[in-house]
Image (cartoon, rainbow, N blue to C red):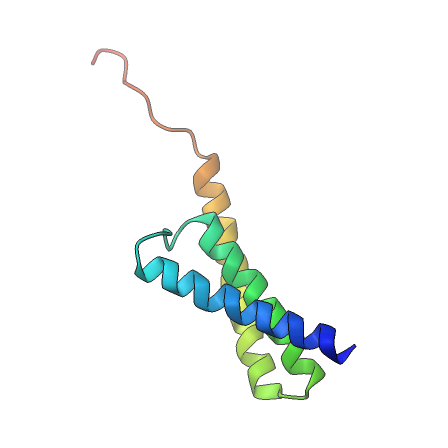
Length: 91
């Protein structure tokens, strides 16, 4: 069980640091779904790892991180679903 929790924690760390690194290197958009998903899953995984070890301040931080990721992912999804404006009649 502990090995699995550690793998989850390290995976979360890689996702969060990877998302930030790719954003900084202009490889991802901060408003894009992939960036938001990486943050959401990374925060969730670190929250689970922290809870297992009783690191409650870290759990609290990752609950907030997770909430931000959910909002960001919902916004990215709704932005992707919006129709692209075409030429107006008469242009």
